[in-house]
Amino acid sequence: MAAINMDYTNSRLVIETTKIEPGSVSWRSPSNIALIKYWGKHGRQLPQNPSFSFTLDQAFSETTLEYTTKTGADQGIALEFLFEGKENDAFREKVKKYLESITDIFPFLRQFNLKIRSSNSFPHSAGIASSASGMSALALCLCSLEYELFGTLEDDLAFRKKASYVARLGSGSACRSIYAKAAIWGDNPEVEAASDLYAIPYWEEIDPVFHSFHDDILIVNKSEKKVSSRAGHGLMEGNVYAEDRYRQARQRFRQLIGALKKGDLETFGRITEGEALTLHAMMMASPTPYLLLHPNTINIIQRLQDYRATSGQPIYFTLDAGPNPHILYPDSIAREAQQFIRGELSEFCVDWIEDQVGEGPLQLEEN
Ligand code: DP6
Image (cartoon, rainbow, N blue to C red; front, side):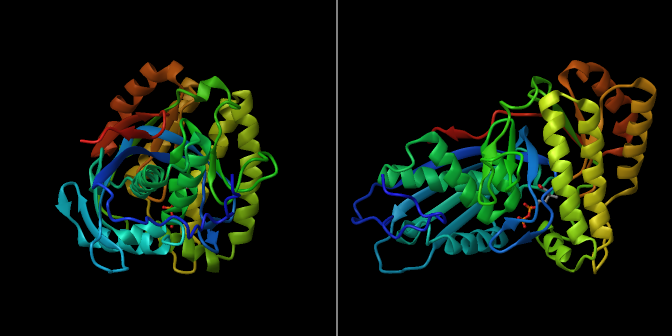
């Protein structure tokens, strides 16, 4: 087999006939929650530090990519984009730009009229990051289309590696959604196979207590974020704490991997909560400071920490780049934890999603 370029550019992936039947490919792909955060990047979507995430189950995107061969000589990307059944110009422009940026990887994209239909299992305005699920679903569709047209990527590992690479170019965190249960993205001395270019699966190595972990997403505020993650990553460049933060993230990554292998919930919780607070501390300390927390984010964190102190239960929180806490706990305490969440935390939220570690993306039958 010919060696694949490290950057997957491949000028041979062009179709030689227009007699290809119209078709479609569909994937469902989940969101993920990072426990060691990717926050700060360089080059072409390369992370400043390794990250680790759980793949979610209930929070997912479903994307269908339809294609028909072009008849004219138009060399641009021809794209229609429907989000939740409706045309969405803002998303279309974003996705079109993304597809244009990867025509060196998939040159055949210029040869088709493309129509993408995408929807989420959670409300778009719920304040849940949809770029990880949306971009990973799209990347999987692109790799499936390559497979259908050229018979390449037959091997599941090679398929996922490329999907993860391509997803990364759309949104960094999306590269981790390609795998069941848990994933690592970013070079590090602890896990030799890990790479800055794509994520790898990482669950066989970790204690089974984490395989069925719960993550209840408490939605305290549904409004769109004032500062996007993309802009937030950019602000790390002028942050005086940036280098210390990257050093800390690498150290915490190493400690977390140790705790995951041992099933050490206490260390897991301490690092996870530290990461959530440091992420928001970085936003507050950036050259243009900003705050994404809501008063009820703090109320939830305080109630949770009090409950943990009195009950001794291993229940922890994390946050992504928004105000909505994710409550993490092992399946063995699900009943008590859910009782506590309903009884004491629900007054602070407008909605919540009971989620857990999931089985990763699923290819959907054509409809
Ligand atoms: C806080 O992956 O959304 O959720 O690469 O610019 O699309 P882009 O950013 P994105 O950043 C995610 C940030 C985070 C942490 C994480 O998921 O690791």
